[in-house]
Image (cartoon, rainbow, N blue to C red; front, side, top):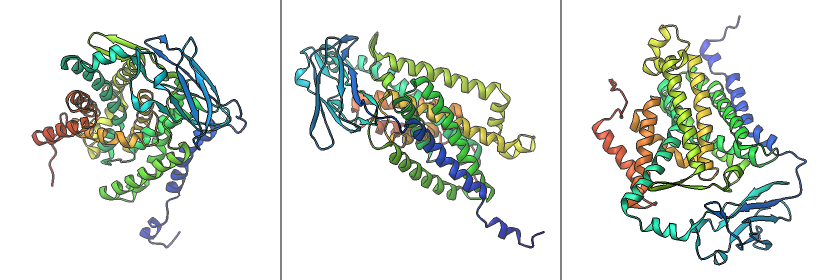
Length: 439
């Protein structure tokens, strides 16, 4: 029997902490290493299909330059609107669409996307997705009455709100069960998007559905590794809320720059969603891709809501979030519940990251940029509750996109934060939050 004082033994580094950190790093790097086999080499290429509302666009020239600015390839879209551009080898290239070769009735919807900079791995084929649109339709939208643009902004806001809600439910549940404000949650979103992109676009080139399922599993494993390897040992050592907050900020930086180191700084898209058909539904337009994302998001969020209200583990999560001490005294295994919350939060964050990447682009900093909106959503709805996170996220999403009708894209986030401040002045606990006694 050791004669050491318990405080001395507690001062030793926890083996579980070291093991957890190693597991966390392996969870981040392993999918990437598996996704890029060493034997993959040769046959690098860029491909794409230029079309407007399903109709091919022929005769459009695309020039490809290497990192030194030297032209390495040049191709013109054929009668089917297809581009097949062979590359001299792996590397980062700039593919520039010559807007002067576009037909008179076709325009580039986003002028900033005239040049795409794909990072091509050995043996990989990268998609080129230039957003083309009908010139008359774009002019009609630009000069449309505010009511038409308001309808379009509402649809865009619903989509954004669903994406924020999907990504932020885990953030709210983690706070509810542990009182931890996890600043690394944005990197969990990025992690899911990057893992899916790696599995989908490099090496094995899995279908996006399979890559997404594996990314969800990896996201859940990341959440479990963070809980078992870092947060549980810190709680056992009775770290304070401020100390945990500082650790989460440091973990956020660590994960963010690890992702940058492995993935790079390129902006990429998923091949399966590189081209999407535009659908007109009354006064607004959307794409089949966005409709699919919204439909799946609604199904998943409905499933999460049913799980929280109808299952034993869901009721246990809510009980721990309401009163941890009372839940523990009632026989609920609080440690197990917290672990499941982290797994669920990591999986939902990964799925949300894939959806954001499919809707926009995959970048190494996408989760960090979304973090402010996620915090706004969970605080507005009532931090600590899953349903509050969803309601707050929908309000933020709608506020951001509808305000863009009048404020423009540069100032649309100001309105979301203004709504947050106004609501909290009237109802400090948030829309669905519960008043708590302080002191």
